[in-house]
Image (cartoon, rainbow, N blue to C red; front, side, top):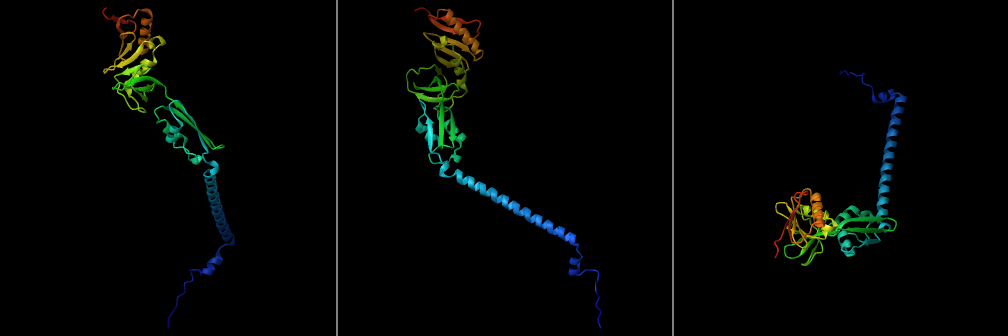
Amino acid sequence: MSLRLLDRSAPEPDAEAASVDPRIQARRDEVNRDQLRRRRRRLVAVAAVVGVIALVFGITHSPMFDVDQVDVASTDHVSTDQVMQVSGLTVGQHLVDVDADAVRSRLRSLPWVADASVDLDWWSGAVKVVITERVPVAAVADGVGGWVLSDATGRAVAALPPGIPGLAAIENVAPVEPGSDFGPGVLAPLEVIAGLSPGLRSRVFAVVAGTDGSLQMKVLPSGVVDLCQPDRLTEKLASATTWFADVDDTGLATLSVCIPDSPVATRQPPP
């Protein structure tokens, strides 16, 4: 004969479910419904965003917003063909894919280009490019009789064959290829050229950069103006301007304006 012990402490499943308060169960059901509604709203929002992105992408990459024309305001030294080749702009590409800053940067790599503006007209499908050219202010001797033109910032813009450059020359500065910078050695001579008065500019045909940083100006009809180190250049140039205006420069050998208030001139011996 066997005995079976019954554990009456654990409720049967049906009894446990029956013991849940109907109000608690209703609350659980409401929470579950709220979670489901939130999931549905998130899915709808994600689908809407994806749809808008797809719509915008489709519109901006449609023929409606292609580049229909490229208008280039060409200059004396930069042709339309050069602009089109370097800019990367092509008729038919999507306007949304045109990076105006990148186009501007590529155009500024051209030796003659100081700056460029790139404007997109979404209504007409046109891209307008306007070039600002560099202005040569000096000619650097290339060592073989020719010249390399420099703008006021020290950027080489073009090479010239042997002859008279038509600009003040800079001597003893290493030449570079057009599109490159001459380096810091050209800055002081350029400062001298920029500071010349009209009267002095008509006399100065070259600025010589010394290996020790000193500066001289070669003048017409003869002689040199010694500026010594490139300090107090405004005062030194003003002193030279006054001297040439007030003193006969016949047979001038050297005019030293190293001390601006006390210019000293030497003359060539008579023939």
